[in-house]
Length: 424
Ligand code: PMP
Image 1 (tube, helix red, strand yellow):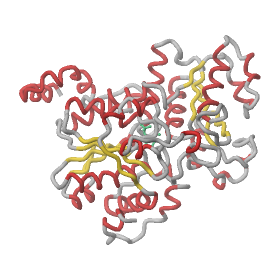
Image 2 (cartoon, helix red, strand yellow):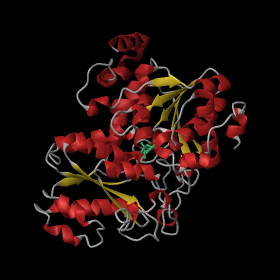
Image 3 (cartoon, rainbow, N blue to C red):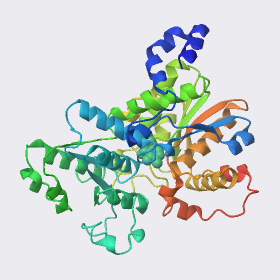
Image 4 (spheres, protein in one colour):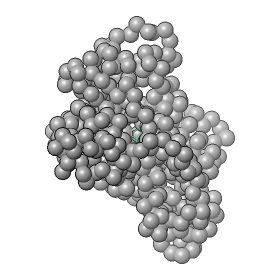
């Protein structure tokens, strides 16, 4: 990587590259690492053969599902948020401090895994259907969990429970109301960590899980806050971005990614854009998300209306992990660097997911499928010969009960045309 920096210097790029030399050097060669935390980052970047051959471009996938703790790109973010809290003295390893977060998805899984590795408790809030009783998941878990409607595939909350996290599902509510799952996680963290003990626990009248109170013996902890915590985009600025730059030898024409919190697209764009001024950054946006309009037309629908109680889900799509109807701090951090946006339908994402298994043996989750549709569209827009990098955030095995249940079984459809996928 020093060599890489040197050769860039010889190309008169010295001023641009020198402030980031340290970051690029972090994407160093493989070695023995310390614990499961050491298995986060430095993920492979590979040529997606079928899509590259079909488009005449190089379409490269960053294998983020190979992050070792929670097996998604969220490992980077969870580790970054925890480490910064530790540096600030908010969390103390092996203390039993509690990590609170509003998610029953990938971030929750990464936080819960790292909580185990580092000796913390994890308390995660997810959304549940308004008609379900408040005591879920405990009593209903003994019934038929796979039948429960949810914003996330049931395997995600099952996994959280196996990791020993507390999973608290609350009815959907707009982000501007206290009853929203993110706000409830924040409020619970505040209630439990404001005083030195747990006496204030009863103040959270709506808490569904008395067990949560029992386990919070120290009254210490922190609200991870993936949407607003800037440790999120910084994890990608310091990790994903430099890795991509090094892996590509500094040649990337377009970077394509969806936004759930915005951390990935902002962090990578902020790292790469100053080094590669001609880079095109493209947002891949699922149906129902408001970010496409924000990027293309500069407008956003009213948050209360769009993330409102009328809808069970925040964003009306089968896709998990990306798509949002507000500008978070992590999206804000990089939004000026996004050049274009591609809207992707559920049908396209499902068809692409099947295509990638059939053609390449790549089994990915829903957000990665959205990214791949947008990568192909970008390739067609730029024309043959360009290099397009995208993110494969997690594996299809996290999506068996929702996304892949809809995608159906992969059969003998080896003669599918890419056109059919793009026009699905
Ligand atoms: N894919 C999946 C599966 C995710 O869980 C997330 C995070 N919510 C993303 C993509 C998007 O990443 P970001 O939050 O950095 O925008």
